Length: 141
Image 1 (cartoon, one colour):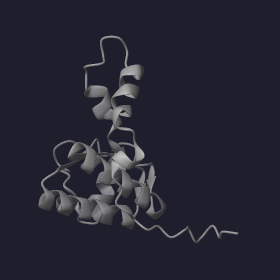
Image 2: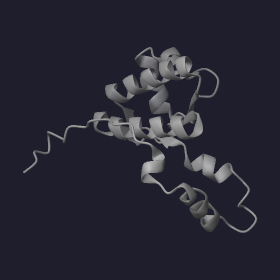
Image 3: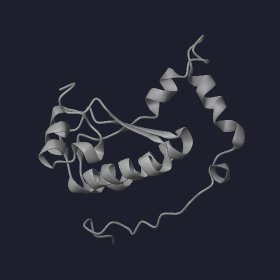
Image 4: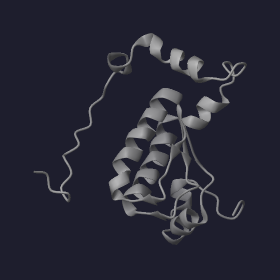
């Protein structure tokens, strides 16, 4: 039996997407799901690609967030983080966002934090990480 306090060990592995996805499957579902006339409009797909932080962005959520951010960077060349629903954010997620910002600057992909909730802004500000994470606190909220 697995103990609820000891999650299975995560061993990151690089995977070639062609090994897990058929080459032609990426375009087909988007065309089937689109409304008539929307098949050429990329806006809905872009919105769906945002990495949405959960209301309680805790250590438990950090690994999933990391995986989604890496996929977004690899597939889109940019990472958009939607922080609009955040009510609390833990140290592991803050560390992840700082590391992602540094990596984006070194690797040249774009990283943006969109719609940060007031709780997110407050926590980042109290931790003095606004510059390290890349949010502006005086302009929008």
